[in-house]
Length: 506
Image 1 (tube, rainbow, N blue to C red):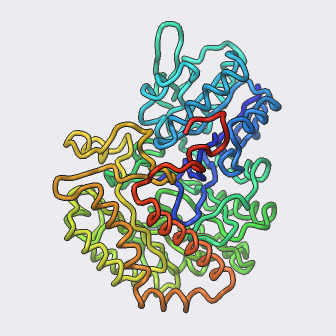
Image 2: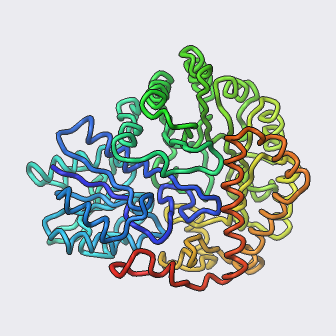
């Protein structure tokens, strides 16, 4: 069976697989890694023929993407979607069906598909299937059934329609043996171009992969552990992780940094130490191999030092808030004291720090937001990101905001402004959405224009690879600020509305 997997076109370069799917302020574009994992399974563990297309990375229009689709002539098309892109993705699904004929089967995947499968499939009769949760093997099994007996009701983890209605099959059991999944980098090498992707915090070009899935933490806002990778922590073996690092080193030599996209890379700190030992024993650290990852503030100094010695360059940590009550409200499982200790330890270990902060969280006030800014300035991480809290479907934060009347809109088509960036989607009686929106930008500018931070940035980024990275993300953020000044209310502009031609809706 011929299976085409498409990161379908959108008006801006949005990362659908990001935890914050929007056109970023820093030029970041994620790999379509979930589509790529399913592609790798089809390549290595099936007789089906896959074809992966990233229309967003290549800036393809509906028409251009359809031309590629017709040339491949698929029997099934898998389309990745996300909450803010859902309406356009569904429109693309309808376009595929109308151009290729009703016999082609269309499946939609992603975090929104997992959280609201019935709502999504009801948006259009062109959608035949919804793939719920991790779908590495769901695509393969569905293709097997469609090619053989057609009994799709025996495929776990899907929502499907027939002439009697719309039905769910039982959930697909989470993959426990992650070593059994082929390297995602195999699919990247065959179908994608590493120079199309960028992460503001990483050296360019970078590559994203996962060494574990799931997170036992219970943060009420985080969509992946609540709707996709879930709370059961599963790990690839250290040998398997470093095998892929070697594969990347040998087969994708242009890559300057690997980013481990795990929800939290350091949940099992002994495994981290074992990975670091494996890297050093194979001499990858001596080869100048650089990597980065997501961590929690409970990561010990010994672990951080071992990571640095094994080639880790920067750690991304979710500080979220500088107020302990807010941290308790969101069930972060961390304290301000732990955040400060972690920052001291990470700097002592020689690691760079990307600090993630959120405003508008459960119980946030102007005072608690100022606590967050003060903490950020005191700790002075190498980079910081201040973002409004977003109530993604499938999260407790979404249900809480909806129940209490704090949710601005349930219309996914209203999630992005005309520049492709997430709007403030919660509004409280004591802190309106408009106030959160303005505070977010003020906090970013206050942090980055702090003389203490400017001096640190200059001193620590003299290396050409670091300097070029800083220039790119600073330039992109400056463009964002200018656009905000010119178009503060997100008024639609022609170049945004008509982003790829007459074949699309805005």
